[in-house]
Image (cartoon, rainbow, N blue to C red; front, side, top):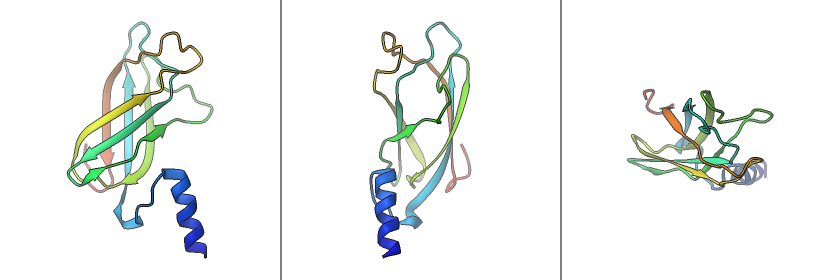
Length: 120
């Protein structure tokens, strides 16, 4: 019963059931460019694709933190399916936020380190 509850809770959190041994931790660092209107207040999600498959979209957000502001680096740690060697990363924006009149976002640099690879 405890295992079933844990799996159900995990499904609510991640959106899918992935056996524990098939997960990896990803340390993601995103640098927003330092130019006018580079930042965004939109909700941003990421999906990582690699040699063994791809993750679900995962929301990048820190509570009580203004993410993705001009000229700043934001770091996130997520747990998701182990994709193997990373080949593609996708960002999705809901085009919203408080100042949704200008939802564009200029990404200067992205770094992802996987616990299963231990390299960028």
